[in-house]
Structures are given as structure tokens and as C-alpha cells.
Image 1 (cartoon, helix red, strand yellow):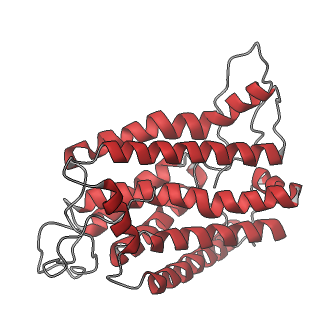
Image 2 (cartoon, rainbow, N blue to C red):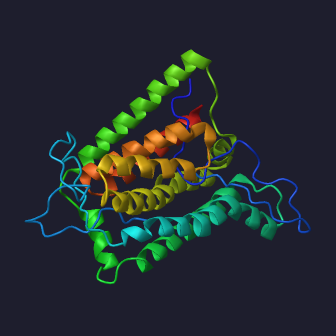
Image 3 (cartoon, helix red, strand yellow):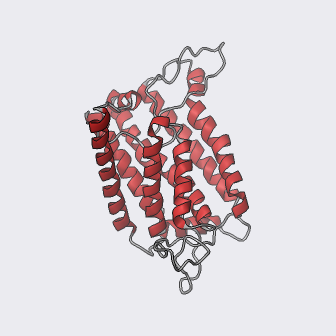
Amino acid sequence: MMILGVVVAHPPLLPAKILSNVSSSSPTKFTPFPSPLYFGTSKLKERGSLKASCSNKDNAHDPFDGFSVLSPDIPWDYKDVWSTFAAYFFILHIPLSFGGLSVIAQILDQPDLDPLTMVISTILLQTTESVGAFTLLHYTTKPQYNFSTFVSEMISSKQRSWVKASALGIGFLIGLALLTSTLADRLIGPKDVNNPILKDILLYSPTSKALGFFLYCFIAPVLEESVYRGFLLTSLASKMKWWQAVVISSFAFSIAHLSGDNSLQLFLIGCVLGSVYCWTGNVAAPFAVHSVYNATTLLVTSLS
């Protein structure tokens, strides 16, 4: 039985060769590379008057009222949230995550990238995407906001213990993976869900393995938690109930991986990460859960 089947990162790992029949005379084929900003919590109001809420509307009958500590005061214009996200998705994410390796393969004149070259190239592409995302979110903030201050407050928020929340989130996520894997084995039979490309990276050499862990446990979580929780969830939660924002941002998180077989699991993972973030107000919490979950998946993959 495979306990953990999804490395949560952009873009999805696909059980196929990265390139096929690439030559200098043929057009570039945009093919996903294997991969599984740190903004996050909204700017806090003055501590004495801050009311914990992911919505700017009070609802005395909501049993979950008070769960979230996110503020409705955000550094972006709400009406521009989806256009900003679309700019990130179509200008940065799709070209770099799903076309970058094909371009690198043509530049290097290597139809099939070896695992070490693949993971190094992916790190460079994901780093470029992260820098681009930070830059985009920086220049789309409202003039009266200091972006650096916002990022600092998002990382250092101590309204609730992010360490305890991370531990609970990790336990819940791994427990959920165990439960769903067990049910899947009983209902449809055992299935090997290891990704061959990911496994090649982990087994190719000690260097490729170390770089693989660095990619999936640091770079990818930083990028994804910043964009999907720090920016998208924070922005949506300023105008709706926190759980509605979690559902919508998790759906976007799942869709962005372009992985039909794992879309439901990715959605549930996004809901756990979003809930941890709303409860703590500190993006370090979902980052820790994300990173440990990916590390556990990598360990299981390398040992199976």
C-alpha cells in the first residue's frame, strides 16, 4: 500500500518522459517539469482594536466565528485580485512550470534530461517564478501600504501558536492520507502511485536527492503558500467568510497543478493548509505542514 501519493508542488509530476523527439528543427513542446511568496497574513490593525475575523462582516450565528485571525484590511484592491492572480498564472506559472524544461532541453540539445540536470533546471525555473510572483504582488499593492512591512507582519504574527497548529495540521494530513490510501486499496485494489520521474531524481545520486528535497520541501512550499494562502486566501477572506475563502483558494490550488487524478486530494490538502493559515494568521504554519508532508512523501517514495 502506498501511504502518500502526492507531492504538493507546482507543477505536477507526471509518469512520462519530459521530452520526446526534441530537435533544433522542431518547434518547442511545452511539457510539464517535475515539481511536487511569502506574503500571507494581512496587515494587522492596531493590536488593541483588532478583531479576529476572516470576514469584514460580523455573523453572530456563525459557529465558526472567531476561528480565523486574519484581518479584512489587505494591501491589494479586492477588485483586482483575480486579474492579479490571472497574470501570475498565465504569464509566470504556465510558461515556466509547464514549458520551462522543454526550452532548457532544446538549449542544451538534450532530448532527455538526466535526473540531476532536471532537478537543477527545475530549481532555477521555480526560483524565477517565485521572484516574478513576489515582484507582481509588490507592484500591485495599494500605494499606502509598505509591502516589506506586510510580509514581516505575516511571518511574525504570534496571535496563536503556529507550532501547535503545524503539528496538528501535519498529523491530520498524514492521517487523512493513510485513511484514503487504505480505503482506496480496499475498494479498487492496491495501486503503485509512485512517480517514476520523482523516484529517478531521488535515486540517481546523493546530489540529485538532496536537491530534490530542497526543491520540494523549501522552494515549492514558499512559492505556493505565498501565492495561494498569503495572497489569494487573504484577499478572498477580506470579503467573505473564512471557510468560503479556503474552499475557493483550495480549488484554485488544485486546478493549478493540472493533475486530474490527484485533484480531489490536492483540494483537501489545500483546505487543511488554508484552515491552519486562517487559525494562526502566520504563513509559517501552512509552510511547515506543506514542507513536512512533501518530505514524508519523498521518503516513502525513495524507500518503496
